[in-house]
Image (cartoon, rainbow, N blue to C red):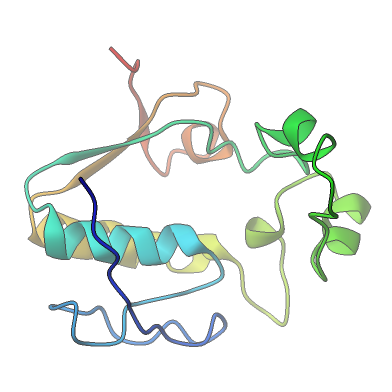
Length: 138
């Protein structure tokens, strides 16, 4: 019922060009979300992308409680940054960049494939800062 698809992507501070096919390196800028957007544009043109649990205005993931129950550490080099500032690492300024720098570009590219992005959390940073519209899940 599923397939594994190997992809290549650009370095996270670089982003790279927006890929038009899965054989190209996929766009990747400060967040796996940026790569997911590029992937959706290739494989699922015409679909609305509903962001669920993508708040970005807190250091915690929506599944933070589950992370504490793992029998291994889910911490990485970004953990210190997220603990210092109470927002997700991808929207913090790091080496002069943050995810929001390229958000208009990503939405524009998705628009070329008739993909719309909405967020299902009204208190998401993306909604509060008017990057995307709020829309309920159902």
